[in-house]
Length: 328
Image 1 (cartoon, rainbow, N blue to C red):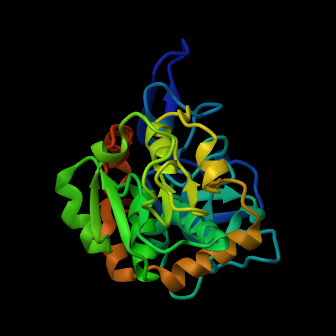
Image 2: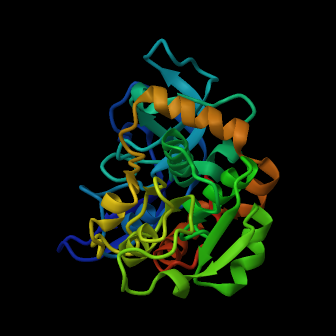
């Protein structure tokens, strides 16, 4: 038997309810590798899965948690042996398949990545899906060439934004962090942000398709009107790596930034990344993410905290990275 956060739905198809339960290994889904989970995190998608509407979950009962890190317990795949440390992000784990909010997980071997040297499982989940996505965004900006000048990070106090800010600062870039909460300014500065931009400055409705060339690149974790406004402020040939939809799926922009400034809009999908790119991103995280700044982002949690934390992250009330110790 092991402990897990289980989400169930009322028999009449109404509300969902999340609670910690004791369940048996016979309940685990099919897979090549059984992992003794040590840590997971809380992401926006987790909030949707835990919430009363059920969000992204396909069937019930369900165990959320879209990422996990732990130790291989059993394996039918030669690539992994008992005792190996592994990380899993993406592949619809925690949405379609049972995820990381449990002391055990059974998954497909193809979904796993060996834990890079220099990272603990706790640190890997302090990075988590959000940090993995942030590194993919930084890599995409690098591939297209970051221009001279500050790099804008929207939603900078959130999971993706926090890690992107720390990585970009470590790499020597000037970082301008956008936040709607003035009290997070000192936190962003501790991560390496050299300029704090109030959300109101860049969340206004687009009035002109082009504004002054300001930013040498952008990691956008919000989308919507904020993304549209940022596009018009990019320097010639600069790129925006877009990773979030918290601001909505609509893009109230024109083609002018793309035609007249050669701006690149790079969509970042962390779910179905090829394994080689996943490993490259995790190795870059181990090399380029300052661990002292990573520690400053961490908010510890246990399984019983998750029903409340799921609601808080949907309201934008969670700062940094929540690290869930599933065995505490």
